[in-house]
Image (cartoon, rainbow, N blue to C red; front, side, top):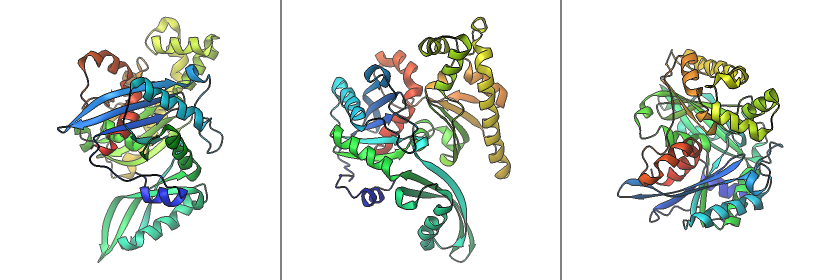
Length: 373
């Protein structure tokens, strides 16, 4: 999603970003709050193959999270993260040296806006001018990218455009550059994780023809995005619902440690009434339901009653027992858990393992596919 030329210009580094079409194997790297996930994908005879994958959980390596929410500084230590990535690569015996990193939603700014009638030649300057009104940082401190969501002919060469604008703090880009150098990657790129999710869960499937609400429940935040026939329409980041928040709620309510609370949450979810977990979790989940309903309603009302046809859940929190059925019933929409491995070949012996981890690898699978789709 992000312009390679723009990144090079902004950070003024001599990193290699050129495409290499002869290379058929690519890494997808997802640096999450509590875990780093890497996927090595290849393509042979038009078939996508899982070559290898690996994960490094922060609490086992360093006893703390990889990320912090302090300002725009999202990494606790570039060196520690690079070491964790190198450990995964070493233990999984991965040889691929070209990768795409996923940028988390809380490290990116998304917005959309309409421009008055103009020609396409006038667009770049107009977008940059409008960006000043929406981006909460000076434009000199961010990397910008944008795409046209809709265009409508007004008269002659003039059209009305609806623009999706994405901005990433330059400091964030520089941190990824430093990590890539420390890891020893020969080539790398950056992509906002929402586009990775769309690629791994929606693109090249029947869902690409639908209007979908994509809900990504992570350890730290939840993103709710509207995807209109395979293209991002709008994305919202929710700080009030996440896997960690649910665990903390269980810990407080039952007066148990966070570790015990996490185990109970995973084991029982909203299914086992005898553990009182449903009663503990339901207020938070009901709040999420209201927010999703509002986002869907605003979209449907603002787009000539265009209906959302399906909700797709992903992220580690999506596998909370009973959550899919509860959301589907309360919102009255077909709801399913996305499977990023659906169109990827892997040895049958991995079937059970893949089922358990699939939701957590949606982003890594998506960015790994960036060069092979």
